[in-house]
Length: 362
Image (cartoon, rainbow, N blue to C red):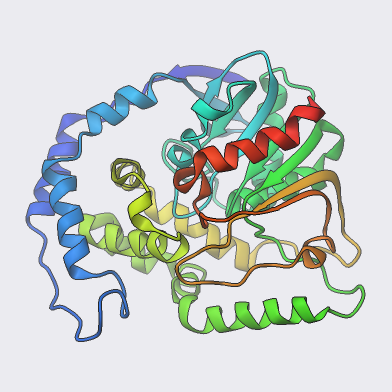
């Protein structure tokens, strides 16, 4: 595997253009409904973009991110960006989801001092190239090859959202290389078949169905016509922020608890790398090109789940017996706070659970 050192250094002209576009935003009329009912609140977004243009210090974010070693690797012909923290401990690969970047998991670095950390950007996000077609199964294979190229024979994996699915498929593709997997969100539904659902499982299914009816619009368009919406989001910082921040608010339990600079670092990475369109193609490829789990499929790798289900807009909390249809659950931790973006919302809480699970496996 060929690798080369990489340093994050965005050209000043790109940042100046971003600020100018924010200042030229043509704002829509406010909604007649209460804030956030019809989508991202106008007042909140105005304040956020004013700070993004005139208060947010991207150069400080670059400095902080570059304190960790970054690399670009050719993994089976795909250029993959990753950050690498070597500490001579158990290696862990940490995988983010959408609408996020590697910056989300970067918040765990200070809290996981006993581990070697590999923090890649998903294909088509940030500084990672996207192949013409990609699913979480494809990414899982890339991640195994990345870890082998770094000289790791046995390691753990952690993730949420699409990162949870990548982590799951790593366990399915090559279980012998993994000492365990840790999820802070379950993205793969158990395969069909098995015993009848319990009352708790039926209640969870009803909660998901109710959530889908009013919250799934973003996924419907991204899994059918992602290119259409990409033109707008790639051209307008306000449009990009509105589309993504609405998800960060709905899927967290308190948007104000997330460091505003962390939120804007994620937005800025999507903007300066022109990757919002390629990131949304995950939804298209996962809908049309993935292979469903066959009946009887089971993850045999020891699995921990930190259940961060305190979202502002609840999707319901999966019961343990539902997860056990697919996973060999060894640790199940319902969390008192924090939602979908746990590494950014509650990094210390998540890191403690990760360490508690992996320490005995090292």
